[in-house]
Image (cartoon, rainbow, N blue to C red):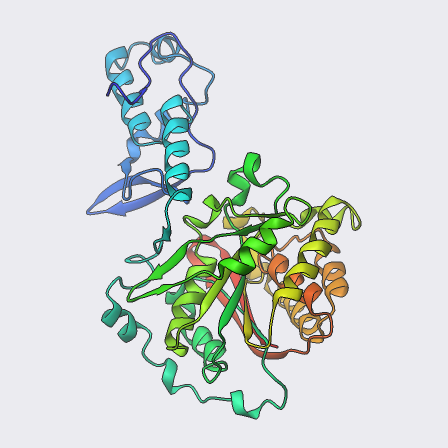
Length: 410
């Protein structure tokens, strides 16, 4: 406890509950619970409270002390009991407190200093045992191989990173198309879902590389340190950084490596690059971000050889009440499918600026997380020709939401 500054005051304002947590009502063994989902993984797995604590949680806004809360409750709960409850939350990284700030800083620095990036989704979205993983992905080899039907050399694949359990067939269709290739290096351009949690690190660095070894069950991928270090030499002008804390819990590269390991058994290096938000482009098409994108894409394209393949990891639209829309996804489907189809058509034609115009027309209202990595690739290779592999709509009806995905082979 001496090394953990757990909150311990009756008169100081209680730190507010972290705003990046998702508190989800669940039912478990005839009990109503509140499950604390922490995308960044600071809160221990499976931490939950009895649902009766819900009204009390609403008081922890950062505006009151325990003394003040006790008076509001008319002494229904003793101050010592309230303090114990606050300390329980603080110990489990629920509050935006000094303890949480110390824990999060320590966690990120320890990750950055490691040489290995361990899988974040193992045991959750897929099995941790290599043999069980192969069984889990059984069926990929049964998809007909169409790679021989392409007259031109295959250069890249745009494919999703949606939970494998709800889109396994779509992954099989996408990755089977590249099974006969044998690249020596694979550049992965992927969505950075969590970079926004670290504005002090990534405010001027939309391109986030990692020089770690990436592990998945039964295999370790070596980084192409030569390419990564050459990109780093031009930082910060090209917006690239090797401060890689955004990779710690990110799934967008990990899922692609799972399928790459199934179709490519030979040794190859990887150049893993997460790409942050490009929203600034909707307002300043020639601003600082646009200049960084131009520099980065020019430099990276010069480093890509005939023996390089590019994986582009991104989903399409995210709509419905889960994502902040007032309407359920079912009422938006027709409109969004029209938007997605145009997005995929423009993507196949390889025109980055038309893609920007299309997404920027409504300021990315449907939250296309695959736009930044795909736009990056099309800026690198503006004459790319793509072929649509599939399009799929995952309807999460219980939450009145949906995510669409698609795959394009270049």
